[in-house]
Length: 258
Ligand code: DAK
Image (tube, rainbow, N blue to C red; front, side, top):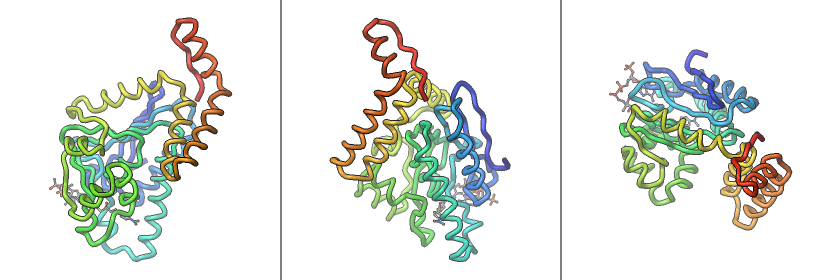
């Protein structure tokens, strides 16, 4: 892969978007590589948490590649949209837990790809914005939908209409990121959270993720039905038997399902 690096260790995959000359902006080639990489990872049983970050120390992802978009025709724009939709939806629905390690600029598509992850941990130098309206377009990688779901309608509208850039502390205050840490500690903090997740039932975590994602797209009554179905599935697992037996026997559980 030309624009992406993948490292796997101890059930954690680190995916680095690495186009330093364009501050890791997403062009079609990178989106294609990301799709291929995620397609491979979603099949892998030896990976249970995926960390997504940007190469270098300045930028997570500086958005979609403006130099590629500037002269694109509507047909080319559509092709890019389909490519991005596939990558972002695949990322959002991976069986694994995804954590965005936001290590700098997360602008436009960069903020949107972070929002397609389950959890966001930001370094102190991270900056977030949806600057698309300033370019005469609107957020098109899910920003109008995911930002409003994360921070509420009013704040999402303010950020999108003004194109204001906010720092990591403000992003944390409004619920856009889960945690802010010094830049040097970013990947360690992500790995520490990953390890806390890995201690728990892998299949249970995947089912919980599916129930949360699907439930947010429907009303409460249907969401509760989905939860009940997922709950029933968890009763078919080794982990459920082992987790509860271990508790009753006052010993640590050995959870293995994924
Ligand atoms: N695209 C292409 N190149 C970029 C880029 C980007 N988004 N961001 C930065 N670069 C390049 C710069 O052009 C520069 O290249 P050279 O001039 O060195 O060749 C290099 O990265 C370093 O950038 P700067 O010199 O500007 O560095 P600074 O530290 O001064 O500023 C910055 C850093 C991140 C504040 C600044 O570069 C910046 O404002 N970048 C643009 C941020 C932006 O507006 N991002 C949003 C893009 S719009 C779609 C759906 C959605 C979208 C598109 C299509 N469809 C449905 C089809 C999404 C759109 C967006 O994300």
